[in-house]
Image (tube, rainbow, N blue to C red; front, top):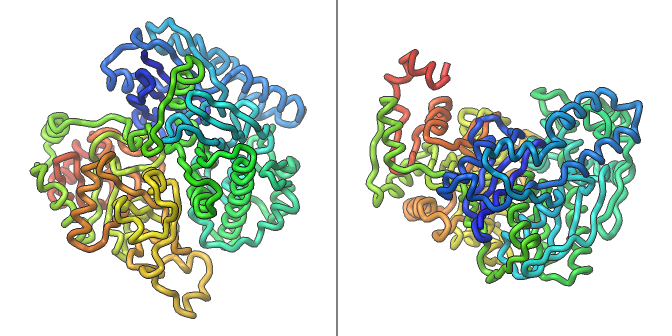
Length: 611
């Protein structure tokens, strides 16, 4: 039996396909359309899933959509009515889209999936999140928490999964939302809502928690059990076109920072403060869930579950014995969750977990390309290349990395979720003191303060990082836990360096791996395992044999403002637009220095949009 899951029309639309309960394929639409956070119906992602399974739409038994559009529309109408006549500008912008498209999901699905005439299932938004967390996890039974902006009415939920059963026990309703609180500060600090939240998290260690008390005293009433209410007079998202109100601006001493303007200590302190508030909410909810459910295991989903600093804190405080976080925790993961929900909860199919490995397969669920396809592409564009012997590939690339070169790494299936996990990654030497600046400014074209994540051999992680409760799923294969660099690898700051504030801290060498060590000695780690990604594991292992360091830099294979690359052509275009030194397309090595003739060919540059 085939079940197709779909999420769309808010942000990060995606499709996922399961066969008899097993995940076959999953991908975000943005990777194919090349429009970041594409919210349109995921026609390309659907077509990929069908192609991967070698079926057509008539083979699909059920289609599942990740939320209930009518209930979401009810919430939107009720909210506008409650705030009328305020919000008329937002109302006139939103309602035509609903009346034209979003209310008619069953008809739209059948029109887009030409030939499908089966049943369409509509779990609630947070049921889809919960299903993506629990059913894909390694656990027979576990508590779950889902925290995001808003679904239909629910903004946070928790409950219990046992076998095939999944039940929500408690919810927090709109407009009270920890996700929207974080997004409000994202907006106020000058970043884009629904994509800049991770920038706020990365900025936080540069700041001090100067505004935390102000937030607790004025904006959020947080109870001991993790439930909370927001004072909505500080916000504008219910009926306006912005996140924050004048009252919010007055509380924090001025209007929001303009996008792309200079970051000041104020933004850093705001980021640190809202991060601390969010962590406290996550901790209190987690403690309450453990107390109420008695469960030893916790699974997490929803956009807030991408807050790897908060996740790491839950793990370190040992509130639960084991935790597992859905790698596609945001709305894209809802496509997978609603498909799994349909198989287990709606259709009642049994589920057996062994508590040692999850059902996500490393989240390598996207397309891959054969050597034949890659060589055909390279030759058709007259691109100079070298074909590496498969047995020597890891050693060749490890040597390139060890001499401080930046490499675009395109290998195996594309990742599902926002993190590059060694399928579509830009990689470099973590020991290099200049690598963070080079990769931020010359490769990624992004803010200099942004930290880079390390990929580390799973069986060597405790040699380099302070990560506790080591279990197969606590080795952070999905880059969703933060841990400190080992004390013995850290470099103590001088008295003079300790006097520095904010961005002045950036270029201080803090460890033997300065390129991946954040200003607070932390790192967002990805552990790499032979069983899920042997190619990437072998590469890092060869690097370890050469250097004694089992850690490399891993950042997503894209430039600022673009989605992660999907195809060899996407990868080559990104390679040529940046100062990367080498590109690896499976077994093919492309050296930037050998592309000089192509770089001077105006017709070629026009074809690849390089002008």
